[in-house]
View: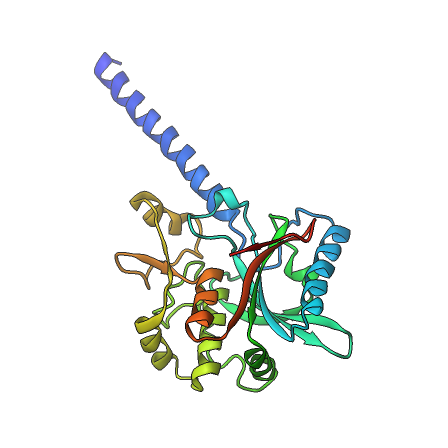
Length: 273
């Protein structure tokens, strides 16, 4: 084999190794991004998760909260995109018969991760894939808590659920949805008294402050190849999505927000968000 062919084969081998290593890296990054699910290996033991769940419910009871939104991070925070503090949020509703809270989630499937369902579980279940020892709290004002409590327990709850799931769904587009967008749509449906998803999306375009995710072209187009949850068809030039902050901003803009803060689940210390 002459030198020319040896050099060419060396280049091809180097490119193959480089692309394989990069693909493994991207695969690892996205597969660790546990968002709308409670299935998978837990970082903390059951006793710790139970205690963290009790910390959350004690915080809510202490403040006489009937309905709230709580968020947790399913990824180490330094691995999250800029501006994203949490990866999963759910409604927490007080249950007077047990003096505890039921958690109302949107979770994607496991056999088919491109579809979602609405699931009620416990605070410990909600925290199963917790990767940071803290949680975000969005507390609506008292009147909105009462309205939200009744709405979630009514037949209208779930009317704006879109079963087609995307990890980073665009809140302006009705074709796909993740957990945070479902809660945004639910809040809008409740406050604006409509279950017309197209009407909700049209109005959100005028008022919403969504999060913009900055990503390289390589990650934008390779990401969906290694994680099917990264559906990009509802995004245009900008990648827009719903975060915990988006939900708090929406309630604030509607004059319905009482508090938004992060709670350290070890110490109980609060930090305003």
